[in-house]
Length: 408
Image (cartoon, rainbow, N blue to C red; front, side, top):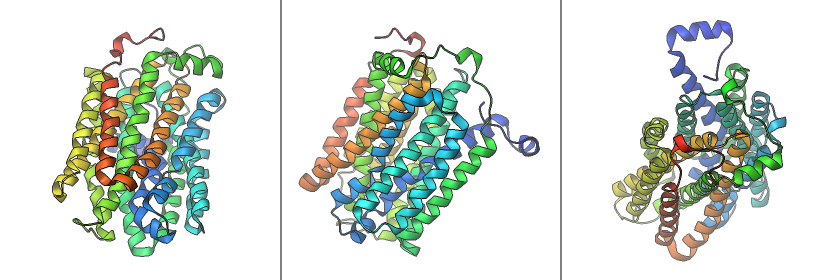
């Protein structure tokens, strides 16, 4: 695989854990520490809205402004990827990420808060994209689905435990302490990568002639399967961020009236995604990424429909289906993109993530406006439409054994 440790540590760990299991666990933990800041702040959105005297839509846009930075960073990495050393780039990105994270604790106004969230997004996306590129360039075709599923599983864990940590710390020690803790987690991610990420060269079989940055971007946009994948990524995070941002306001209002200290426990719904996402790679390998994405997004849309109930167990079931369906689809789509790209895999991953996070930004803003104007019902209808559209697009993806760069 792609991760190794220093000889003395490696020898000890090899006796305790199977190498494949250990490698996949490190990949997942790296993902967790990379994006734990992204969604954790959503769990304290109502508290932040009160602190900054902002409306739900205003605070939702500020909290999710990180997706602006993530989209920009994804494009930058796509363009300059050939000049960026993977391992060093990841370490530097995670180290720099701790700076705006800590500064959020002392942000005086909503404008400063928003700017710092954008800065977080720039660093998170750079680390995320470079890690995907590292995996795509160093995993064999048979191993890559499991590696990408492990990475997205770490993303799922960040959604679950990150939100619970944020809610617990904010309730017990205040929102300021929350950001200091997450800054420490960012630094822990940099240390983990420095200790475990190998300097192994690209697998010879995966070496392809590298085009110039502009040629690579034109090639990727000219490939139908990649264009469809980028659109699916946009729609996945559009629905996910929009729904999970504003459901907080539904849960603290009547008829549920959940207290702030229990709001974080709601995110135990991500346990289902944590259990199912590791199987996305094998499912996509066996049945194809397209059918996997389609079924997963239809299941997520069904989950959204259940959140319209006034019964809390049904709402939580719906949120569990929404989370597991979107993450399952994301794992399949992420791996598909790197396999569909004939060359410049980092550029393809960067473009996918740019569209993915642009979808999150659009969802946070547009669904926030819909939520303010039409309530939760309007928000659910709009998000469900995006998921169904993504499912329909999934049916048009080529079976992976026929993927080629000429697929235009």
